Structure formats: C-alpha cells, structure tokens
Image (cartoon, rainbow, N blue to C red):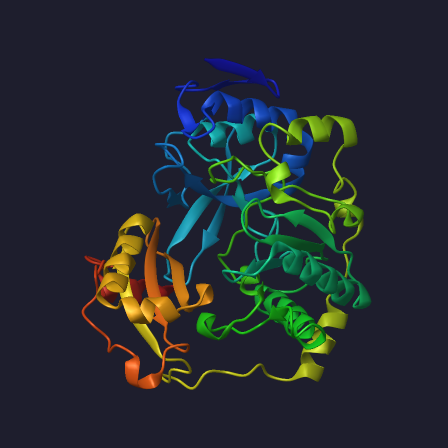
Length: 403
C-alpha cells in the first residue's frame, strides 16, 4: 500500500505483518502511530543521522543494526557521512520530514536511534543525554527519585532538564546544549553529572563504571560517547506491550507509570496535551558549569588494568539472549546451593555490541557466596564469537589511514 505524506508517496510493504505478537500490533499500526505523533517524533530526530535498528521479523527476533543507508533508496532520502575509529565511514539516514520517517519505519525500525548531532555539524553534539538504568531488584520509585536529583544538578549548572520514560526499565533526562563542545567534553560533562548525583544521593544512585560494583540506579553517562545512540522521544520500544519513550513534564514524574504510555495511549495523550518538549530547542545551554564541576571533582577512579574487584565467573556468550539464559539455568542446576544464595543483581546479563547486532554475555558475581563455596570458572555453556572471520590486520590498516 502507498501512504501520501509530506508531498510524497511512501510504499508500505506487508502492512499487516505482526510486529508485536502479544498485542497483535502490525506494521500498519506502527505507521499510524508515528503519523499521529509526527510533530514530537520529528522533533526528536530531525536533521540527525540515525542507526537503523531493524526488526525485520518482528520483536520476537533480535534486531540487526544497519549504519549505512540502503543502496536502493528514494532520491529524497537524505544521508550524512559519519567516520568511525575503524577507519570506515557510513552514509547514515537523516530524517527531516514525515515521509522519510515512515520510510524508515517500513524498513522494520520500531524505535528511532539518532545520534546527538545534526548533519550540519557532526563533531559537536547539541544534546546531553542521561540514561538512568536500575540494576535488577531496584524499584522504579528510586529511578524517579534519581531523575529529580539529576534535574537539580543540571539546572544548578545552567541547563534545562527534560524528562522522558525510556520505554523500558529506565528513564531518560535530556538537556539541549549549544553545539560548541566535542564528544569527549560532552561525555566528561555527563560523567560529572553522574558523579555529582551519586555524591548527593549515594543510597539511590551510582556512577560506577563496572557493572559488578553497581548498587541502585546507574547514571549512565557513556551514552554521550561517539557512536552511541539512544531511543528518541516518542519511539515505540521493542517490548511486549509496545511501550513508548514518552516526554513528560516534571510535575508528572513523581507518579509516572511507564506501562501507561503505549502505542495505543500516547496518540490520545498527544492529541489532548500536545508535546511537553515542544520548546526544547529554545533552551540550549552551555557546558561551562558542568566542565568546571568536572575539574573540581577530579579524575574518576579507575579499575586497575586486568584486576577483578569482585569474584566473577563467566557463564555464557551467546548470539541470542534465550540461549545465554538457558546456559545460566544449566549452570544453576549444577550449583543449586550457590544459586540459592545469589541476589538479583548478582546475575549480570550484558547486551554486547557485535558487528551488526547485539550478542549476550552472562556473568555471575559470587560476592554473596562464602569463599570456600564459590565454584571455579568452568568452560562456557556457550562460547559465541561475534568477531569470527574479521580481518583484524585490515581493520588496523584502515584505522591507521583514518588517523
């Protein structure tokens, strides 16, 4: 079927394909959703290169990540050339109007993952992004309380804070910034936010980089590093109930229930209330205050190279999460006494970036197991190598040429 939008015809293939098996939502439902919230969704992505996170078979299968815009594309699809440390570059899609957005959704993109830069200045971000990621077992009220502390830190240092649900387990706080600082300094400013939030609310938040040492809500500052993307405002997320990463007012944050914001409810909310982030671009601030804070805080603590700070054993490396979790269950069956002593946060499930998709690593922190009862490292339940077949010599040559 064809959709007439923004003066163009966008071909929608397989509109009846079910994307969300548990709710029955189809690709056409996604298209209609993004049409309904077009102004807000475009505000989150307009002019930004984006990675295409494509769920070509629905959310029940892992997405693959596509940096390069498809070679076969309409001549009205814009691109921007991004360079990477590998020495490679990629012409990434840039969405500026609704026709381009729907074209991306038709490719199988459920959520939208733009970079924090505009295509006119790829070196200097204009967004600072704080991703609040609770460890297992942490109640959502602690996430919301941490968001309020992050707001205080940002606003005390000259920036306006904008809250939104992540559409998953966490929460996002954004700040619009003037595009005058490179990625390294934006990340440094975000790390200063994280460390200051931890200092003010040590019972709630952590800025610890090593996952096994975290307690509470991790204030993730690394989403501001080069080549990192975050699901943008009004993105539908690939979770079973089709939740939406929804912009809020700060008055709404204390009573926020993420499950209330879905592909079905957000269009009505948008029609009735508009976009709480409508004025976002009017509030670009400077990083001077946060960079001064970073200097006052001094260097962040670093883990000694090659040294473990916690008693960890690795269980599995797998291409798919289900396979990794099955390996964990087999390990628990061999060590039932140990498994009974584990706390929720002791099981570390890491989604790791591969060449074009996420793979999964599972580790177990044995900190709550008496030392004389801790099992030794065993052969992995599965040992997937996402880099098998990569010509590392060629990668090194490209990196040298790029440098």
